[in-house]
Length: 112
Length: 113
Image (tube, rainbow over all chains, first blue to last red; front, side):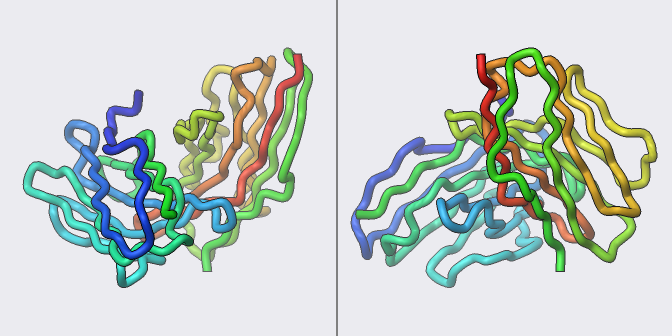
């Protein structure tokens, strides 16, 4: 158990819908990262927050957004969902930059 | 650009034998950190081992060790005394300058009983 929690574990929804994925980092970790793992794209970095502030952006679509709250948990919002958004979404946390990132169990999203 | 290459999509090894997974990377930075993560069928991403680029000594964690060749930008993972529970996808990754991990495409390892 990495200490990072993610909810829900599974999510099935329809195209055009909006979903929210939630992540709680390990105790004491200030950085939260979101990654997308799809069959044909491998693991792609989406976005990083540090202590409530956005720190880095990767290949995140404009339909996706995220935030980190004062209690350090983070949410990833995916809107206007498309079939291609079906993937495993991971949250990871670390104490600070270049520190080891520990991954949550992931949320498996299926868009029908 | 930061890239990670894992040239072995699939590998297999007999139980109790030793196997080496290859990884090369490309960066112009001098200070970075390298990782191997394991993803078993459960899909959980599990840290296997970490190597700081400024350290010459190769990292070791029980049956797992790395061969880090900085000049060649090579970072291979050796698994000794392979066990059935080692069956998984193995991802090589690194952090450089920015804060996110750059991942390779993975090597699927099967341990044969």
